[in-house]
Each structure stands twice: as C-alpha cells, then as structure tokens.
Amino acid sequence: MVAALDYVFLRMRPAETSVWNTFALSVATVAIAVVVVLAVPVLRRGQALPVRYLLAGLGPRERIRELAASRAAVVDARAAELRRIERDLHDGAQAKLVAIRMQLGLARGARDVEEVRAMIDEAREVAGEALAELRDLVRGIHPPVLADRGLAGAIEASALLCPMPVEVDIDLPGRPQPPVESAVYFAAAEALTNVAKHSGASRAWVRLRYGGGVLRLVVGDDGRGGVRRDAGGGVRGIADRLSVFDGSLVVSSPEGGPTVLTMEVPCVLS
Image 1 (cartoon, rainbow, N blue to C red):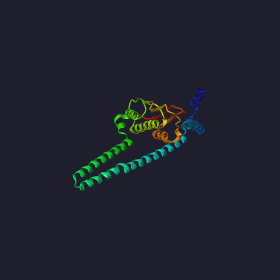
Image 2 (image 1 turned 180 degrees about the vertical axis):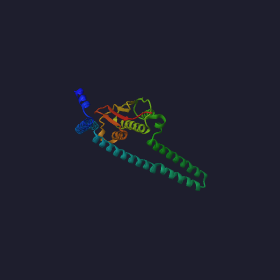
Image 3 (image 1 turned 90 degrees about the horizontal axis):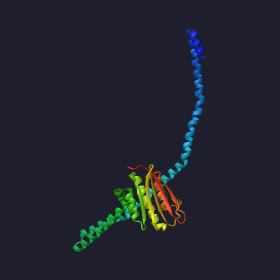
Image 4 (image 1 turned 120 degrees about the vertical axis):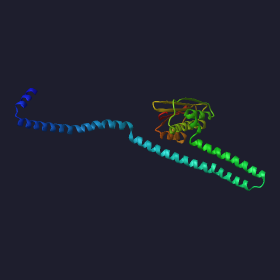
C-alpha cells in the first residue's frame, strides 16, 4: 500500500502533488480537530476524578468547620487570658506598687527614725510580694523552666509538683518550635493538674515521643475515669490549645479508669 502511494506521488505532476498535499493536510487537520474536541470531555472527567477523590478523603467542609471552631476557641481563650493578665496586674502588682509609693512618701515626711525605718521595711516587704506576683504572671505566660530546660525538663518539673507519684518517660531528640513547645508543655501541665484535682488516682504517667514528624504526648492515671472530652473544662481547653497547631486529642476514660489522654502535634524538631 505504501509503495503504491509512493508510485502515485512520483507519477503526479507538481501541480497535482501540491493539490493532493493540500487536500491531505486539510483532512488531517479536520481529523485532529475532531479528535481533540472529542477528547476534551474525557480528559476533563479523568482530571476531575482524582480531584474529587482527594477532596472526598479530606472532607473540606468538615475541615473548614473544624478550623472555624478552633479559631473561635483560640480567640476566646486569648481574650480570657488577656483579661486575666490585666486583672492580675491591676489587683496585684499595680496595687502593691501604689502602696509602696505611698509608704515611701510617708517615710519621706516622717521625723522619727524608727518610724521611717518601719515604713521602709514595710515598703520593702510589699515590693517583694509584687515581684513574686510578677514572676508568677510571667511564668504563666512563658515559664522560665521551659526556656532554661526545654520541653523534657519542664514536663519533669511539672510532674514533681504533683501530689502523687508520676512516672515520666521522655525520648525527645530535639526541640520543637517555641510556640509548639509551649502549647505541649501547658497541655501536659493542665492534664496533670486535672489528674491531681479530679481523678482520685494514686499514680500517673507521662510519655513523650517524636516520630514521623509528629510529637506524641500521653498522660494517664489510674483514677476513677469517666472523663469526657465534650464535657468542657480542662480537657476541652487542652484540645483547643492543640488545635491551633493542627494537633489532636484522643480521650480514653472508661468508668473505673484508667484515663489516658493521647495528644499529637505535627512539628519539626530543631
């Protein structure tokens, strides 16, 4: 067939060859255009299928709702924290600083040496109390032990403050970013505080591991159990704190115990 076509082309005069080539090119162009027009819907469907599959797996609407709820919870928590700081400063350190100023003003106008000395001693004592309150306030924002000893040391220090034995098992090859580190520390501290206040446990344990780009914290106790995440309180606060960093909280707490809180936060260690 190919040889026959070659023979025909060779026998044709140049004018006939030019006409034939033009006709063949036109037919080929039309055929390609038809193929393209027919293929576009097929290709579009083929591209839409994996996208739909991925979106169905991610659940975008659910994710958007979760992020909106998380953002609202974080905004409320931050506003409450700011109000607490303002209240503590106004009722605590600020009031004591005003008292110190008044004591020093009275001491300046006093004539009796013993009276002046007593006023200075009282102002000095109030200044010490104001300094202690400011330290506590700063510790609540970003604990110095977290900056000095890192996440592992800070959790160990928090465990030592519990009124019950706490087994601490930490294997952390590096340090997460400071915001993540602070969130995980406060989550562990709040979980241990809840254990001490409400669980009736005789012992507790804390485990911290890192693997696969995820920081995993487990806090458990042998208390009475019955903890529910949807009941609000400290457990809900822990979940809201971790959700800022796309973290998760799983609560296992059957009646009679034990209670196990499993927290995971994706992060990168330094």
